[in-house]
Image (tube, rainbow, N blue to C red):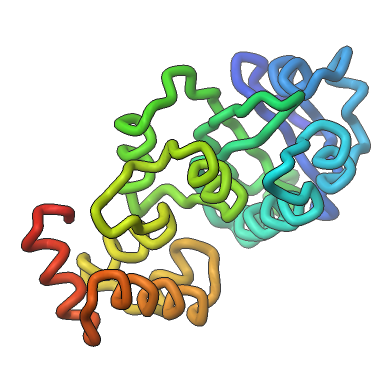
Length: 217
C-alpha cells in the first residue's frame, strides 16, 4: 500500500525507476496539472519536460540532478536541498527533504516533501547557501547567478564555491565535501582552484585564512 503524501506540502512518492506513484494536490497545482492523479506514471524526465522549463537550463539535465538526489534517498539517506525550478516562466524556490520510502521494511522508492519559500531575497538565500547541511543543485546555482539572487561578495564566489569554502573552513577534506554536496571530488578541487585564483593565493590554508580575515566566513 502506498502512503498518501501530505497535501499541506509539495510532496510525492516515486518508484525506484523515478516514476511518480503518489502526488500531493499542491505539487499538481504547482505543475499546472488538473489533479494529482494526472501526474501518476510520469517519469522524472517526462515531468521536467512537461512542466519545468527554463531558458537557462536543460530540463533533461535538471531531471538527471533530481535522480541523483533520489539515489541518495534510495540508499537510505535523508537529503535536504535548496531547489529552484521554472514553471510557466515563473521561478519557484523550495526547501526539499528527500528520504527513503519503505514498504514492509524494504526501500521501494523515494519520498520528498517540500515547502515553497515565498519571501526570496539575498538575505534569505544566504541563510540556506551558508548551511553545509543543505545541498544546492547545479540548475539552482545557475538560476541564482542569472537573476543575481546569490549574495554578492567581494570575490564573486558562486553559491557552490561558498558551500565548498564553508566546509573547508570546518576542516572537511575534498572527498568529504564531495560526499556532502553530491558532486565529484574533481569538481570540488576545481571549485577550490577557482577560489584560489580569485583570491590570489596558492594554498588552501591561505585561501581560508585570507577570506576569514576579511570577515567573509
